[in-house]
Image (tube, rainbow, N blue to C red; front, side):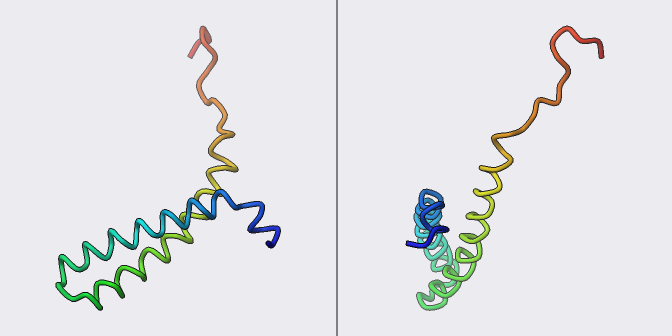
Length: 80
């Protein structure tokens, strides 16, 4: 297994399961709107595929910067 995949395995697994859920929901919605199975499948694969890549990089950014946010408010008792 490549180092990248090994280092990011939890995030890759989470991304994969998110992708399956997203495609399923998108296919059901697209079918409800179009009534066409082939069209709904095509539409449901395009957008979630792009979203899966965006989600992976969003998750990596969140891990890097989301947990390191500094408190921006003044300490208790400090004059404003």
